[in-house]
Length: 238
Image (cartoon, rainbow, N blue to C red):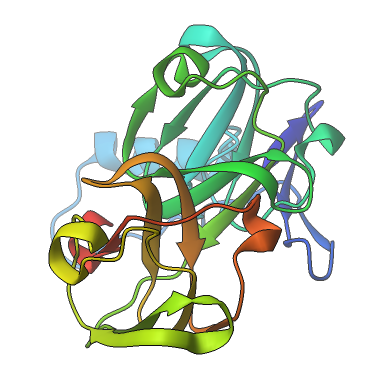
């Protein structure tokens, strides 16, 4: 959702690009409840009926407000409130240096169309994320990670194209080298259930990548990364 003048819009997501316009809220119809009502209470109800609410929030349905991006550090400058995937934030703001996650889990990217370096965010405040993560570029796109409840299951392979030794895992692994003696890490995988994060170094360090259910025959499209640890995105993080 973003504000332009006195009008509020809610972005419909990158799939359809639609917007919903919210006009002035409806007035209040005063009703006197059965029972004893004083003259003062009647005057208050009459005043409400004669003066509909003018606040931008009154009279509108409650909208999910999940992540807000700001142009400048420390939540300053123009802002953009996002409630779903956004393939190119440049349409709303030319730069982004801080953000505030109010609910949900998200992946953010330093290039449009969910490309480039990515970073995982959950509820919290990121007053200067570029210094925190060592980013050199601003956030340019973001993707909301759907909550998963249930079992987690993934098959990981020592080599590309589902070759080499295979392991089926259902929990976190802080080091492929220590657990499976894979000196080059995991190089292909098949995610059956749940959402996962993989990291280029043991103990969940270094660059990361988000994996949702699907087959991943090669990680060459991921900058040639070799993943050395992985963890589940848990529903308790939401």
